[in-house]
Length: 111
Image (cartoon, rainbow, N blue to C red; front, side, top):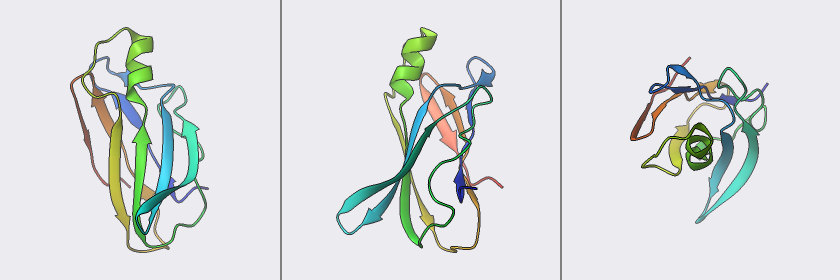
């Protein structure tokens, strides 16, 4: 199982956000390296996103919200959502949910 998971809910529609491409990256010096990618399923979740173990340090998840909102017919302000977070304990699981609407988003460290 991936050490990082996500769940995207479209709060404007009251539904899981299916079909969003998500990329997981790790910061390495001045660059970012892709560790994995996936697409949210019908429940808004990515079944497998990246490796089973992440090194401590900064990581980011990129969500292609432009393609999602284009498919749903909604005008939107954010074509991409990028979340940077820190892995401090390589033994823990990191769940990063996103609550999404065409003109805003929020996130938090889930369980």
